[in-house]
Length: 261
Image (cartoon, rainbow, N blue to C red; front, side, top):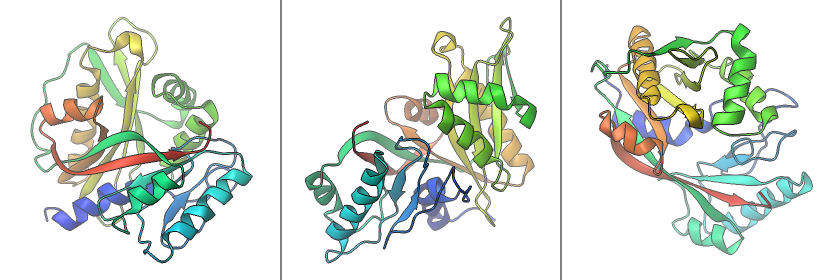
């Protein structure tokens, strides 16, 4: 059965908060009316994030203050995931008043025709990573994404804890080591595959590697019985590429940052 509009939006809004707890490495703190995760060892908005707000006019300011107090005690930054259904209606104003700043603008993208063929560079090979590739995965997430090495290690292990969670490595003909990384997982009881962040080492960009990684992940999603792919694409980088590949924008999801990044 084809994924419904509701399930597509739900996956786009909630995918960042679908990962399980790994005590001491990926925590799930509790705040009223929010979903949240935190990385005790690393100060970074990808690891420290709250969102999917169901706050009200009455409690929004106090909960924002609770979030700030929690991460301030750790001397950590925090990212606020602002999705379409976030409430209250003036949440942006409240966040900005509290000192949050918009740092990333994303397009929520969907592809419902994952049967389509994508032409990719024959000099690029993409393979599903195994645990033996952990060091390469950490290196690429750290250097190409980029993000702190400790966070790269946490994410590397975290993705393998979710249903159909897999990392991918891309190789360019003539280059011994992998040059790009990406990932994918599937929400429980869903026909949707979530395409997670992809990154290529700067010196190897422009060879169609992103397209090759997308083609491989879509092929694997089809093999798993999925019929729809979603992702949140940075409007400055991946979103324009994905639109050319056939993805359609269905929403906006922005990230606001608080703390000394």
